[in-house]
Length: 313
Image 1 (cartoon, rainbow, N blue to C red):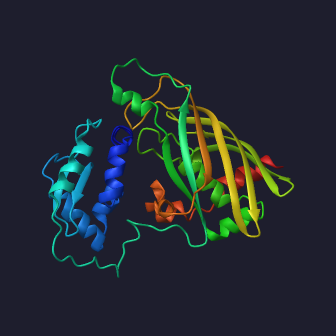
Image 2: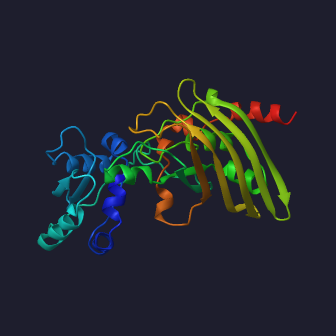
């Protein structure tokens, strides 16, 4: 989060990237494991950077043949290093004479998964509201505390068709809850497990050509997290195509453990907003937990089904 705000909130940096570079932001963890030509190329580039030895995170500027031109991770937050390096590389750049294209006949989809064919891509934004923090004078902490967590939610073709009819499939609801009702505002978050969902009430109310969504839920992980929230939203469709999916889940969130570093003091208000993604290349950016192919897209919705049936009796 510090890197994004301090590095890319700069018009000069963005212009340099647009005019002279091809920007690429992969999952470092997955690309280091990818068993295809893209993975080989990525490892070739990042392994040329000597420091720091403990991580491959950071920035790399390379030629099309995989020659590393600049590579760095620090300082964090950025102090103008990105703009300086982009300028220096561009001014000194001499393109290689002949570069063979990557062999794309084999693609490791565990590393670079694609959205479900005929499904939906939904943008997800999470924000901590009314949070209290330890006193600090560090600007990087303030950047992290004010950050908005971004992710994408995938719906399969079958789920998309059910949504267009004004129905919320259990598998879709479970995926939304377990993988996306999380505090990801400061980095990689932990997904909820099925047993963490303690209560759920959700209903769809027809309103002309629109469906209104209302509900409440409780997620609780013993000895750590708790999220009790209300859900409100609007769903619209034309024929069998969903044209609008605007949902807000907001409630009280508290956590006592975190792999992300700093935690707020006591309970906070966590808000998570969902909306259809605009067409374009960004729709290909996979959800964080899409690499869990057997878990993310293949959830059967059993934990949701049991609670929904109980709530409607």
